[in-house]
Length: 324
Image 1: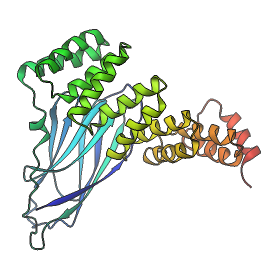
Image 2: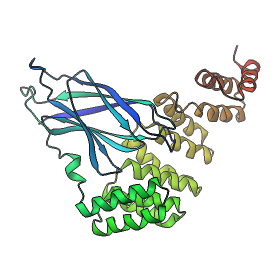
Image 3: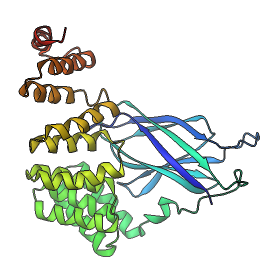
Image 4: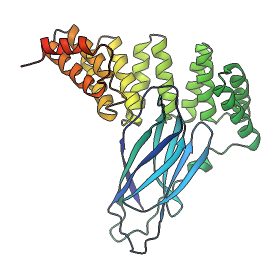
């Protein structure tokens, strides 16, 4: 039986709320795969929209090739890897960029089969497109809800999404969208119940975990936020956004030593998109009297954001406190 281990190398996730028309691309490599030399493109990549509940793009690709999807708007996605029409791996992606940009997600896998299996063993997973298929009626309602959300008509979106989950209580994506629409309407209890229901149906659903964490942060329930965001970062450790919010939650309960690790990981995963986190770390170090470390954070920030309005103030701080 084939075992495939998927290693995610991700950059470019930010907590921004607007933007669109991005190009999603990356390198595709499977260690240990035996190419038969025919040049046949046995692999396919599918980009599944968690928001719309359907596959948007399907692209053939060779091992050691590069994929590219154009005009990808902000939202939640699953990038599915298929070999000979059977799923062998997936990556959850949340995109939220301020402006149109190129977003890179590399896919590195290891191919493992039995001692004499070569490339003949296949995974038995079911395609996500089959798992999340909606009835035509619910599909129409869900798409109308998405349009209402785009128009900032949360009340209409809530009404439509309630119809979707009433007809199909297993639709965790609709429950998640319902939670977000309720959150925007400041219906906090309803939002939390909707997220909790989504997670009952799909316990490791990243979008629901992340949004529930943000909801609890808005309520200043930081311990509860840490609980759910810890689940999220365990499920998707390569998310810069999740690492950021988890680190921020630890800061709010004055556990800076725990916060630093997650904040630094957010920066590592998305050096440019999370540049402002350097400022957060600098403030933390300055308050702790570690001015040389604060200066180092400010220096790294300015290297990424040379047009920062208060650049001169930071440069003065660096000059006065930088470790000699």
